[in-house]
Length: 320
Length: 248
Image (cartoon, rainbow over all chains, first blue to last red; front, side, top):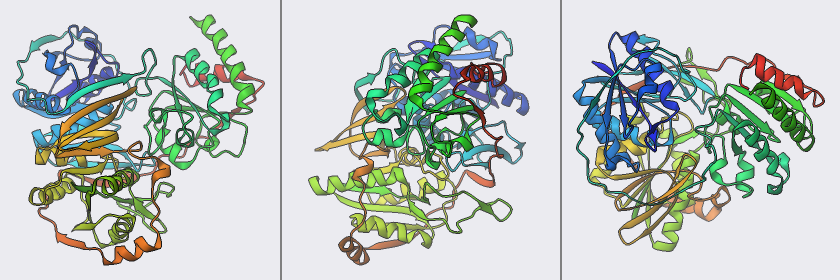
């Protein structure tokens, strides 16, 4: 019996969300009284994970794992899980994890719960809290299979330091034939993605047109933030779909979410509810978003945002 | 080309979410149920395949008889046949197993499901069907074209998109982008009349396997009142975000 923590990597480096996955898995293993094993793919140096409780790290390295293929990857994870007799597998909520984990669940005949936000409240029956109804509610759910897969919601558990020493093992995996061919990838380079960002700056119809998006982009740049938008903005083609956050768009679970000129339709709020701190800038004091926000500024975005950028720059200069 | 679109019957996106029976059951009092939005994008894309490439479209739902109005709506939009597997959906695995069992004796070239339902948000049904039936699978699909026996699919990834190709049969998890919001169809009178004549098959569920169970719901604790900062005092906002919220 052991907890397998699968951590993601990109270009040979551990991704930031791995620290939360390992922190959570360490606490889960402790609660269960069993060992945690970390699994990483194509990562040379895993030593950063020693800050969060990793003691055994299994490495799999192969060009087969360079381009993400859900079938190949879930199969390799299941090989490792079986070899260490894993009773629990913890994965992130990234787009790729959500893609491959159902396949992994079938391979392991495991019960899988996504959007988990806490450690189990009971071990027998195994009961765990997750979000449902797109963050409008929480649900206590049980898993009744022998192997249990937990998809941890990002920024829900947090990062907890536990200094350890770890040993590494190399696992020789076999690889399925590739059935799906990757033709091309289009990534906006040099920009922080909504999934990776600690701060997201989001714009709505209140900005009046795509030509005013420099306000959002400048504020995002000042904060090292990703940019996002509301549904009408993406429907009108002001911004690409990939920036649409909300119930039918991307979910956001950042530390700080700044909504500018977004009234706060219930579907939008549902999608961003998991963010820790929400700031709203809107000239309509009746905008529903003010009821869901932590901090609010009632004012014209075209007046407030440029001054906020100047003040943030001064703040950064002082505090760096 | 035969296409199966998986339909989840969910509360409308504007619904207030409440629970009854000691918070064990979703309270559907006064709630309008709709086709799950991610499924509706897929259904509409399937209609284009029907109109341009003569595809036959079946829809399938695992649910009790209360989901039939939702299935009739898909027929009114243009699906050819509806199948309802007669059982309350227990969990994602249960639903996927029913559909996997159905398609193993009724094969399709393309199965479209939403990337997730907006009620339970499991995000696993299309992937589980693919795993159970050992079929090619791509989720977060924002575009799909099919020629001969081959699909070209655009998938949204963190920070961008990628283009993938594979052979049919294929299962996709669809979302906005497959079609736009403005492409969605409201059934017209002719469609509604025709839908009454179209087959809606009700079949018994094939097994009772499930692996998880939702046992109790909670609503988020009401949040504190928003702290308003004057637009003339943005230093205070920065100070609060730095010292109080500790996010700067």
